[in-house]
Length: 255
Image 1: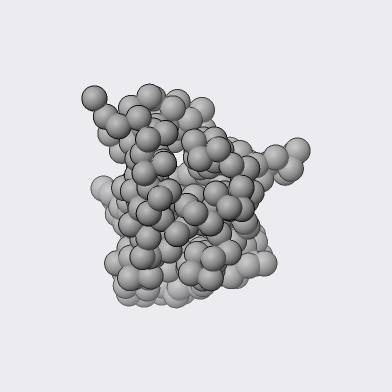
Image 2: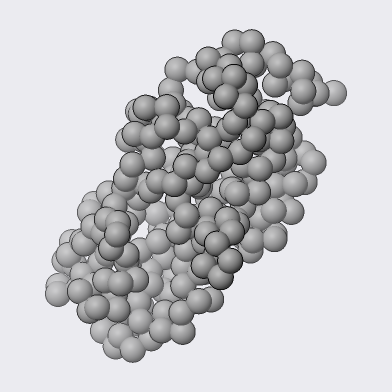
């Protein structure tokens, strides 16, 4: 039999500076990107936060017996927030890359997604994946995401446009400044559900396949062990799978 969750938490708290800080504060501060549909998304209809990692953040705070607060950030800045102590953990489906792993610690992965393309239904020049990398095309990527280095390395003819807040990839497409943008399974599902102008182009095979995990500041092995114990517990009790099904993410969950 495994170690009970409460015993793991208490054991790790005795060794972890971050857990000690969380306990003293009485609050778990979680970095999220509020535009990440099905992951960490602020629903514009009611202002409520929803998504797989919102559910998981609530479950982690409950496990730790503390309040929960969300710290809004984006993929260009979340590592700074972790390093400066602005949040305890990033729970926003953070893609695992070697560059990021040099700055932050990753939990065990729980999802994996290839990269998809989004263009308009009226775009006649981009009908299939090979049409993307053609001279004259502009491919938008969100600043700081895994798509930024991937497309810089992959594209030979098209131009890469890096989009930083408050600009959006959708806005660049609709304005005509970009022809297509690259994203993952959750975000591109949002596009077809919410925008009748959007068309998703599936990649060949598992192009750009990326593992997703939670991220923490480096140097606190006990805090990392606590988060991994939490993730394993949600797998065993089925709560992770149920949350994934609730938010339409079952196809990209790891076994």
